[in-house]
Image (cartoon, rainbow, N blue to C red; front, side, top):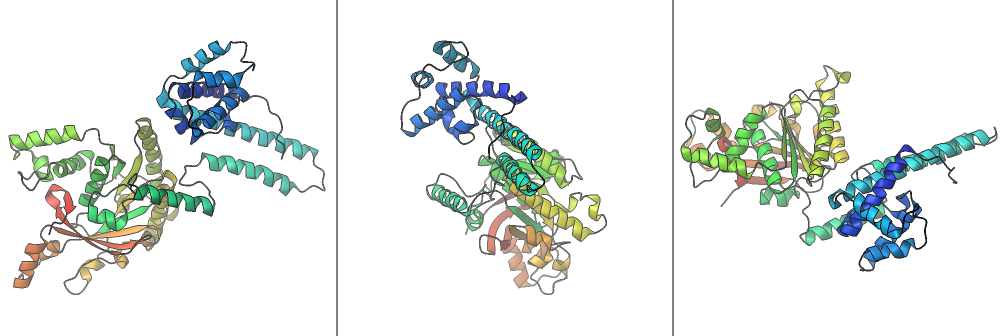
Length: 472
């Protein structure tokens, strides 16, 4: 399909500046080219000579050669450079490259301008073909051509996690990821920070909706904070939506976890909140932990009653802000699903409201390419179960089967000690079991879309918000 010629767009002048800045950045540091090539190609440049220079730079890099000003001189030859000499032109390239670190932003600006030109050309062509058409022509064919072009523009603007690909491309991507993981270059997902759980699940993977469910008192928030903190320590950006607690309370839990050591004075998060019982040594440890972890990529949102759309908007801003700092948002934690506000569409129908919420959380995970960890209450059916075994089941998920349906993974928490401590007249056997299970949390993996169900036993100190590997 031949595109109609269009008049310059408002973005074209900005694109020229970005093109010169990118080429200058590459001349200053060739590592900028690798970043740029993942975003733009030569055909995206609006100025033909810039496209030729970029193409030559890519070719030179592929051949293992050095990219120098001499290469630019050779490519430009006798081309019209707007009335300036090649030396003046090279000086302009260097001057426009304000920072090599901005190479990615220059490339994105060039790509956006290219997409706008594609849209404008498609619109002009559609108008021209519509005007020239006769009543015997098929308007669906003309519209279909334009839709294909605009759909390509829309797909190019999508994050990689949502972009349409062929089966072959998906297979190659899977093999590359497997090879990188085998070589130790990357892990599959942001880590929970507990080796046995990470091995069982491959971590919190991009695009996953992970449900961590439990009855009250089992340690949902303890687990959510511990997993988020461990992931942030490993360099993964975390956005924690605390719909139940204020940030100070969450900070108390995080501090207790960071200061936890079985060999030293115990600092509980309740003790931090009270303050009066803390020793000088405890305060020193708290201050040291706060300083040590103050720069973790960990953001807390403490506003209550948010909708999923509000969470999505704030997460997108956080993702952009982290990217500017060279960080990557990997995990969203929502504490908890029951406190999310649904739209008015299903007002009063709790099952439909939860269905809407979990579906939206799954879409958000895919859209942002992050793991969404949503904490959830289990129903009271657990308590009504006959016998001593109160271990949770998938059917105990509260309010809606959609939680099980939408989730990529469902983990349920169980602490036998919680029930034994509240049971009167313990038998000798139960007293022994209580002693053995005091600091044990069982993570029941009830559903795993890409792995087996199973059980992982962990050490857990609820009062210090500490979860770790259970030593033999």
